[in-house]
Amino acid sequence: MSKKTKLVLHATTVAMLTAAVAPVLLTGTAAAQAPTTEFGGSVWFDRDSDGTVDEGESGRARAVVKAKGAGGEFTALTAADGTYRFSGIPFGAYEISHSDPAFATTTPTSFKIVLAAATTIDPILFGIRGATICGTVWRDANEDGLRQDGEPVIPNSTVGVESDGSNYENSAVDGTYCLADIPAGQQVLGANDRAGFDPSEGWTREGGDSKFGFTTGRTDPITVEAGASIKGVDAGYRVARMDMRTSQLLMISGDTTYDMKSPDFAPSIQVGDEFTIVGGVYPDGNLAEQLRATLTVPAGLKLVDTFGGMPSTIQGQSVSGGFEGRRHPGLIEFIGVTVRVESAFRAADVRLEVDRGGYADPNLANNVLTASIAAIEAETTPAAAVIPVNTTKTTVTASLAATGANPVATVGTGIALIAAGAGALWFTRRRASLAS
Ligand SMILES: [Ca+2]
Ligand SMILES: [Ca+2]
Ligand SMILES: [Ca+2]
Image (cartoon, rainbow, N blue to C red; front, side, top):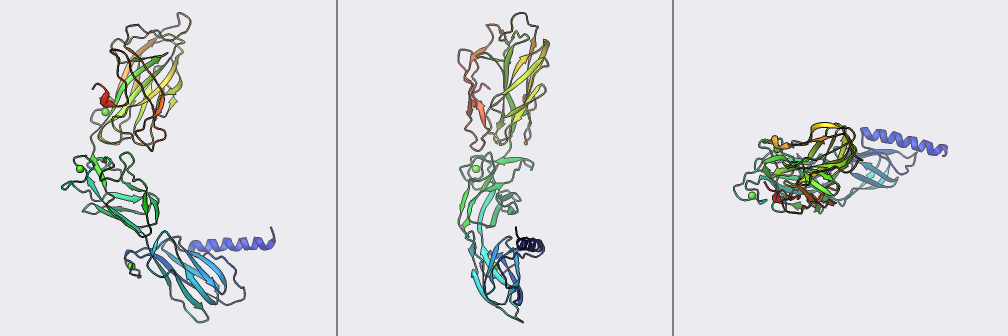
């Protein structure tokens, strides 16, 4: 690296530091001895397209403005308030320009100026107009996903642009919102989680009038043209009627799955045995909800490996886990652990507990399921747990498979347990098929 290059780098650093205070970023080559001057202006969102800066119209940050002319080519970036400034520009004729295909324009995209001694250049303003996306936030009282006359609107509820955390609006008293200054491209909108509001509520079904996902609260990507006006991106909510529930406790020994809640479940377990315990949990009700659970097994059992579709980790005598995204109501997910009997223990509980979600849970009793097991010293060569022949059992096919219920959750795998045989339980992922 030559000494000259180092000096240039140093000068650039100084320019960048200056830019933090005044938005000046100089590039290009200026003739060192020529008299220089300065000028500036702004890039702003001209929402009403009248070419003048009005109240409520804000500047656009980090827009690129170019000056090309007698002294070379120069570039400035706008500050947070949309203003830019060129300084140290040699005298002469220049063309000042700004254009960005992501926005419509409301003024010319270039202006010609001449920098000369004793000349003051008026601010050079570039008007742009972003797209608008508007809709109504409403309460889907009959929960059909459609917005009927008479269903109430929800004021003061936040909707925003996912790619720009500062671009959000609270709905007006009539439930409407309008997001402005949106660049062209694929845009995703998000509607606020209202679990903590009164009434507590969540996103209604998608695919009808509500454009926000049932499990995500986000729209599908919306194709936005520069300066377009998009209407009808409505957000529907349902008042929460939720109950987090456990569904079953299973023991898998060899190729056989047993219902641990069956009255005749009385396994003979001894030191050295290895088997798997699985619990089913699900959100019940009318909304998607986060799903987390913990399965705890008695001391004396060594937790060997996790099992089931719910992402989980082993901590002490428990396995805990959950899904990142929200899960559909009625969709059973399984958390499990394979254990080895290391020492004998008296009757003690296996305990499954599903977490309360973000909505009120009117029945905490059904969040917990327990079943008692015991283990004796090894009397014979260690083998699979011996279970009385009359114990309720079922042949199962356990496989890891995508649930298909939540297209955005890549971690959403679960085991499908398919029962066979008279009197056997019917294990299924759909609560609707369970005896209730
Ligand atoms: Ca205006
Ligand atoms: Ca409705
Ligand atoms: Ca519950």
